[in-house]
Length: 127
Image (tube, helix red, strand yellow):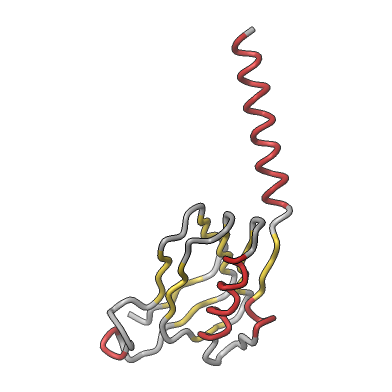
């Protein structure tokens, strides 16, 4: 009896997680001005800020294409779980870490709980 109850509870939990994942609000970087083969740093940061402020689960989508990112800190805490879905390529400048404004980090996720990074895209650090 106890095992049957645990299996039922686990099944319900998985169902709730699947439904909530399917209802994530989508934030596409191109809706905020990101363009392939152009500096899309500000568009990425603006998209992240909107998604992170969402009270419901959200997904930041980088579609196919090469998006140039100079340096970005994607910071939390976010109000709800967030997914970073990379389908395209985020490409670093060729200057290397010495050309960054602060520190030696190109892209960082800071203080973000319940973060999922998904997709078939590439973080191209040009290294």
